[in-house]
Image (cartoon, rainbow, N blue to C red):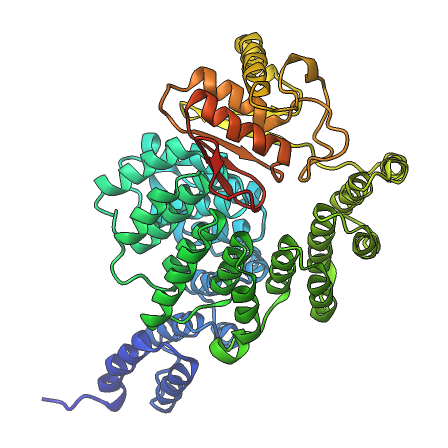
Length: 560
């Protein structure tokens, strides 16, 4: 019997090493051994080498290997494309697709799925859909559907992702969704606050035996949180065995948004005690928790110790959150000093100074508001919020002339803030309301207005001085937006959504309202009073956090 040659005996061993390699050094060492054995250029060796380099993110080495091949087939082209896509280099992946087509190599379903994913990551959703639609229906597999679902979700097209998932369930030829498809559609539901559909997908995951998958669980924690069901978020989290960094971060961020500051800190301590190392997002979540719960000194201590304790240097988002935290507490001089210390630039600086300007308006510190406003005006775009805040700051101290001048300047320059809107989900259908625009209620418009008139009368008996009903309905927008001071034209959108919800949702059901701006003080007081009058619970998600109203009180303890 002939003794096997060195190359024949060595190849399976080296390929096994390549399959298990997780770092560039190991891959390069195995490559050298293959080269020394004279078998580096065989089909099997080249394929496994290319995949290993891509898996390690060593795309320069992968491209060098690929360019040295003669007439690479569709597998090699697709492997390199996938490597670029996985490394976040979507443009290179798509460029490779065009080069592949020019070379005469026909893509297969894996190639097309990779292309759809790359288009999605590059923000070219229509191109991703064109690739998906161009596939033969029988050829579409889990990767194809998953890539298209992810493309929609990653580009904030939640409703389109939900619709595509419905197509999968009806036209997917019996293909069962995997954990990545399910997590994508759950994330889509979170983005557009579609609680009903999110619950249905959760049910599907349980029926498919994937209820305990961590990828799906993290998406569910986020979805229930963003849809106003923190208790459900907590239940999903508690069922995760040995949660890792991402689940812990998700539940900490959720607790922060609901104002459960001490609970978020307890979760953070538990996480660290379990040996889970936090990242910058985890620490940002803890800072938010401190900000929305008045735990200022605890938050500042965390900011100052991030580098020494966890090896994470504070980034602009951490400084912005800390400035916001100090501003909410009325410690404006400290907030201003920290803003100057941060030396933040670009859009991050705009967010930081807008945050400080908002706090100055709330605490009627026109001197510091003027300084913060000057910083905001240095930017050439996205200054509408800052200008409205500046106008409100003047109005809050009785300087109506200056407030009007700011508004007039905005009109001359064509600057307009995004209109405030609120939406409520009824039987899996969202109803969107704008300030003073009641048409979304359809045939029940008059009923909504009559109900608001009745509520206003009962609220006045309890000392309420605002207006809810018919007298204030117009075609206005919430230009006073996230602060709710100054001239308010029309009934605010969350009041209209609440009135509609009280009519159409069964008694005993919690009414959940989502809003794109910060809830104003007047509406906040109105929701508290109405919760007592009608004896119902309301949950409002505004730009910054959640408010849970029950029997005249709010979970934020009026600190937001």
